[in-house]
Image (cartoon, rainbow, N blue to C red):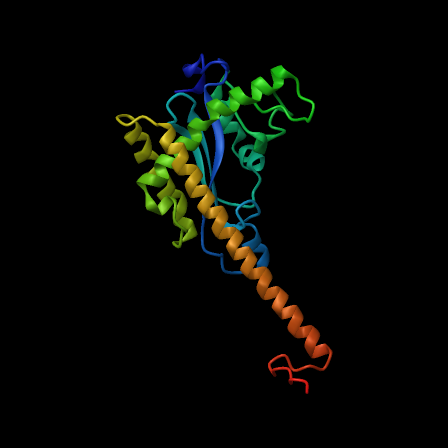
Length: 238
C-alpha cells in the first residue's frame, strides 16, 4: 500500500497521514579511530548511539517504513535524503508530519508539514504548531511501547553493530502486531519521555565525569610545570 491510501489524514492535516521521526538508542563506544567513534556521538544525549528513522501512521502509530542503525551524529534530514526516493514512492500524493529536525525538507518540493519558526509568530502559526505537536505524539507513543516490550531497544546496545538493523526490524514488526489488539495510549508517551530522560541524564553524568578528569589532569600538568610534585602532600607551615 501507499500513504495516499490513508488519505484523508488526521484533522487538521488531511493531506498528511503519516509521521516521520528518529529514535535514539545508546550503544557502546565504537572501536577504531576517533573519527569513526565521533559519528556515533549524540550531542543531544551526550552518548554514543544509533538513530532509527521511522514513518508511522498518524492515527494508529504503526510503522510503514524504517531505517535502523544509523550513526547518531547523522542529521535527521540527511537520513531522509538518503531514502528520499523510496519515501516518495510510498507517499504518493500524501505528505509527512515532521519536526524541526527536518527543517529544509521542503526545499526541493512540498513534501512535509513542519513547525513554523520565529519569535514573532501569529496566533494562527502558534495554533498550527500546537496542532502539529499534538498529532506527532503518536510516534513517541510507538517508541515508548516498543522500548517497554523489548529491553534490547531501551538499554545500551552492546552487540555487533552489523546485527542492529535486523534486531530493530524484528522489534518494530512485533510492536506493529502488538498494536492490533493493544492500541497506543498516552502512558506509552510518558514511558518514552522517561526512557529518553534517563538516557540524557546518563549522558550528562558521563560528560561531567569526563570534564572532571580533564580538569584534574590540567591541574596536575600545571603543578608539574611549576615544579610542584602533585602526588606529594603540601608541607604544613609553622
